[in-house]
Length: 66
Image 1 (cartoon, rainbow, N blue to C red):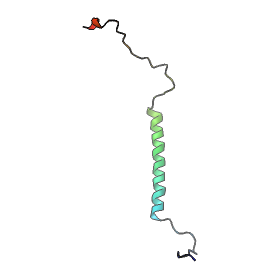
Image 2 (image 1 turned 45 degrees about the vertical axis):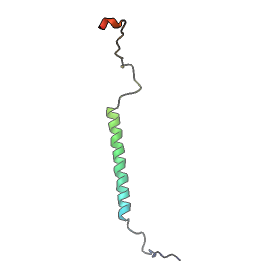
Image 3 (image 1 turned 60 degrees about the horizontal axis):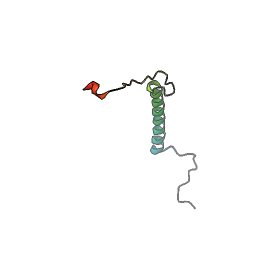
Image 4 (image 1 turned 45 degrees about the horizontal axis):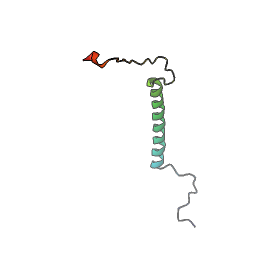
């Protein structure tokens, strides 16, 4: 004994909120794919560190600069 009207004609058309939910999911998926492409394009390679040469200066005597 439900108070909701029966739908004997089949499925109801999707509501506006269902369409907005599907569109937001599609746009979020596009954004994630775009960010992954940008990460691959601009992110440094963290595992190949052979080209990283640190620049250091060794100071033997402080009076040398005075």
